[in-house]
Length: 289
Image 1 (cartoon, helix red, strand yellow):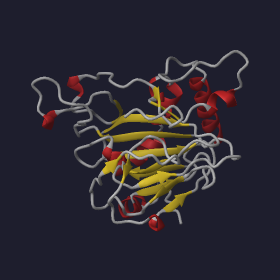
Image 2: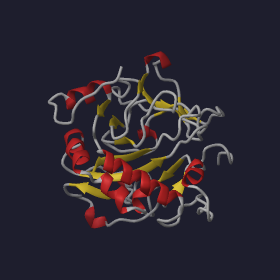
Image 3: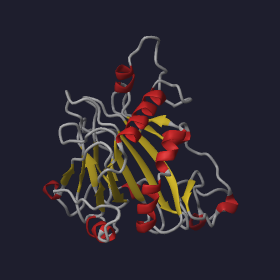
Image 4: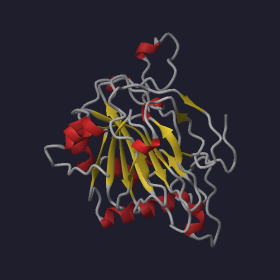
């Protein structure tokens, strides 16, 4: 059971409000997918600049071997014009302005490689990690390979975003999942979840409060690459970082952002780079507590 709504359909907003996600088929064409996959390889080989945790490819090392070392790279759009262009794609902005509003900023990008044997991610809500003040956080998850149950596709609990409650989270030692904290204490069961099996080039748009997870790539299935971009209203402050001196938490505003649509009413603050491209811990080297 997968909610599928074409971005030009009149019911996109209704489906998004009901389920907390919509599936957008044919979001990218084959050439666009291929270009992003090629760019993923270049980033992983160290050809687009420094990524904390990435060891540049050795002479003669195959692309596949290089990619298999990596679970996920955060902020690839800071290294790659191709990745940034994908974040600004007209189709993405057409949908985002319908579910956020006219003014939209990009706050994070993530490039998942997730080759055979790599872990999934436990149940979580993105808003727990990227705290908007107006519930405007939205993710656009773009499949660069066919995503299946066997290779660790997304799972979501339809409607779990509606209450607008951020559930408690905790560290865990489940080797099926990476080091990200898991949400718990919610009034849903795993039997409520649906797998989002989608073909390469499909996008899944989902709400920051939606409970979602993924399982490990169980092996013999190749990579499950995906590009994930997180957006929010440019009109909302983002208290992702602690406030500076003489600044109240109520006005804390993380400015490591990229305007992608409309106007930024806080543009007078400028932007400040805080996060740098880095590799996500996948338990092989242990989790940093």
